Image 1 (cartoon, helix red, strand yellow):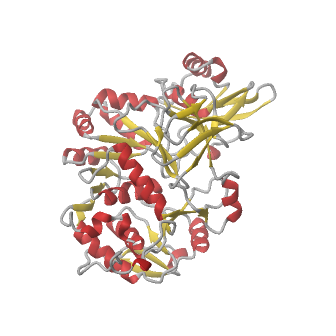
Image 2 (image 1 turned 30 degrees about the horizontal axis):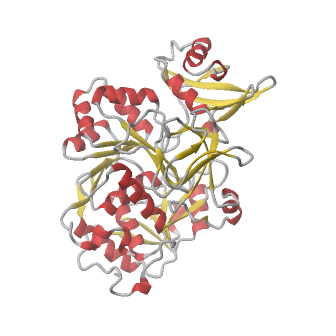
Image 3 (image 1 turned 180 degrees about the vertical axis):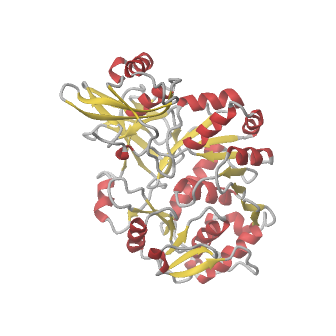
Length: 500
């Protein structure tokens, strides 16, 4: 069971800082003791829920569950009673792990509660191969059950096996040259893949360190990078705030310039923010692509050339293909990583993947699990993309909400959004398609102007897009909003946009 964290039980980095949240921290020895003691108390549990606040307690709880071989269900503390009730009813945990001072809502209070202690003492009581090989968890055993956002119905619990976590983190280590010498800083929530698996379990698997900001701030990022942190993980809204602050903060620019790697994920980072950060710091932001069910699929490599708008190439061990609606393959990456087929930057297809990084099932949903896979075993991501001539994958949007069929063309909303964000009078942009008797669908732009008192005209924005992309990709309708609806990870919720 310890194979996910060889550094945790090996003892070679016992006195190295493993986790730091604000002014509270644990060395590897302290984490091993704390998580080991808690793991011993979880024996026999079917599943455990974790009240996933951005604290040491959450990290210790998840590590303890993984050491014990008990699947953990991270709970978003901001979820409403209805969503929490659904998740708890669906996953049926026998206990909830929480910080001693956490106040739990009524829907959670019915569970047995174990308060997580973060300064345990004594020996680690984790089984080892020498002790009893039969006690060790299988790579296919469930590690985490992470619930999807539920934009098209109640959230579904994606069952992530131990192999998917190990394979993704090891593939990222290869792509990013990630080692135990790296110190990661981030302020991401811990109920999601990005913040929890990449941001907490990733450093622990490498034997490195993580410093969690608690709440993201430009000041916190600068402080940690100036104090030896080497990597920064964030979502586009965080990098947008950094880009805005860079215009007046020379010290922040210097701090970001010291980072070995800046990584953005969970949604596309607008080209404009890429360019502003690079101009101010000399560093390019690396983007990667993945989802709850697949963990990480592609990434720009640390030794590659980051190009705004692309998410790099498939990670080691991941097969990827683009397919037409009828299942015809447009382009693919073969076993040695070479792209074959149409990598012209224009041929749009749905991304399908297979590999050890995939989830095993949606909990209690055999129908949804079956529908998610093709007959030959490829997972349907629902994301649309093209492969550029240099082999880089470029996401153009979600099949359900971002693929617009207008005038005989298949158009991805993402590239239009990026073009709109290059206009100096546009602060935020979202693009959707709406039924049109002539075109099939017309392109609609939802704009948050930089100056609400002086927004750009619809014709100005249409011409701006037509010049950068193509005339058939210009928005036919423009609607102005004070802000765009977003989820906790900064993704725009297009289904929540107001409708006439």
